Length: 223
Image 1 (cartoon, rainbow, N blue to C red):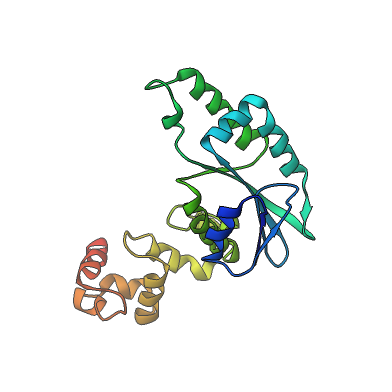
Image 2 (cartoon, rainbow, N blue to C red):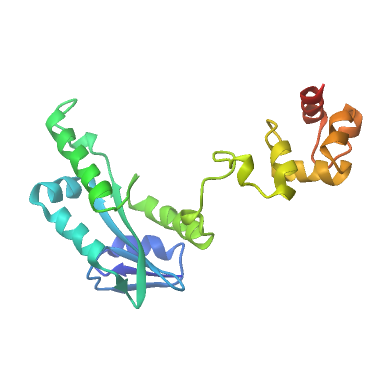
């Protein structure tokens, strides 16, 4: 992975060099930061709160977003993702406690950015948070976490969609506190759901990863 940073972002370059090796300053035609991976790239546009508000008022924001969206390839890599980083406090810029007109304008701008241009917005405190944000982003990109489905604890398949050999694991993992790994351990130890159902608390505790509390929980489910 390599990071390209616009040469005008000197302070940001210094911060990034503390955490990353492959950094190159260059004259970026689009965005402020570009991350290149083996077969794709990610473009990040960075704005402070005052700059964001001014760019909305001057319509410069839409020109920049459109340019990002139209950029399909950069540094020889197809662009996979485009991100807008917004940092600083908008509230500190208000003259009064609450400026309804300003927030109405910003709400519309946020929705336009996300829904119309398809560019997600991430809020960070200041430039010091950029290296951390990029570190987490890079880690998730390498693990393909940004393209995965929700984890099973949030999204579960219907029983009819599961292969027959996995039905037992699915049923056991549905017990509160019992995930896939413990379900596999139980089946490996007992061989069937029937034997798990008639096992004592002491017998259940012999399974790897099953303590007294979980053993009692499983026991109470079947008795």
